[in-house]
Image (tube, rainbow, N blue to C red; front, side, top):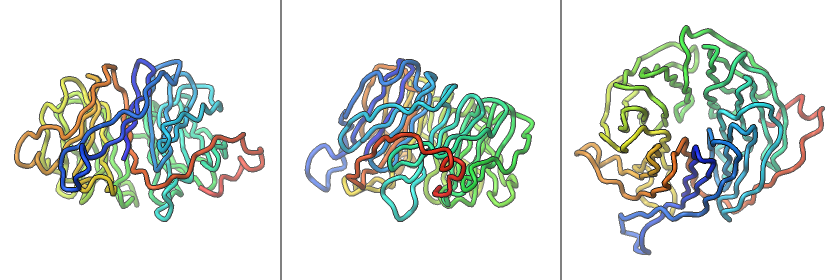
Length: 338
């Protein structure tokens, strides 16, 4: 499995997580660096990864694509007139390679790309102001987005247009679906709302001590959050209470959390969570140890840069992603394959 992180200094970082030796029973892991170079002309704001494909977005108005299986950069996508604020891959359950890449921008627009090769299918306006975060439903048919305009929007990805919008009363900065797609989470400052996806009804409000900057959904209704508190908190969203917490996981704010999926290379992957901080460290934790007390990281890497985002992927395919030309205008009007 691989981790990809972006930094304020324009650098992209790629790491492979694997056992320290070839003994299958070994519990010791290491983060081996795959690549590191200044891929953008401005700070990297968001990253995404799925299968062998990864992407980074920046305030330089571009998206860069990477092949994790070969640690290669495949070049940029130029279809934007404003900063890229959020990225998300959509991978159908029966495929190991993502089918679509979705991006959100500071001008309030959402773009849909086909990944075979990376061509633009449709771009449409979803908000009046910049989008803070974007979440794709597990069905691939719809997406939720939150924006600086203080609204929650639902977009129909089959038609490539916004289908619903409601004013929240306060600006939300994070939106995430759980693994089943039956619930979604919205964060605003230090509070996180747990909502039913069917009707957006609020079930619980989780209140952190300080502002939440990142979140990731785990198994059995667990939601991991990080931010200004420098800790990683695991919430039981079925009860609305804290399940456990890794206190002082980093020396400064936590900017990214990834729940690592099971992979043949790491037997205990379902129990592993990775975090990235503006202190420059990427750390991998065994959350089973957090229940007993403060754990030590199983692996860590010091990038010596101000990290801004983190994504992870389980490499299950050797298929090489490609970048192609923009789709014809009549194809962009449908986006039916999403």
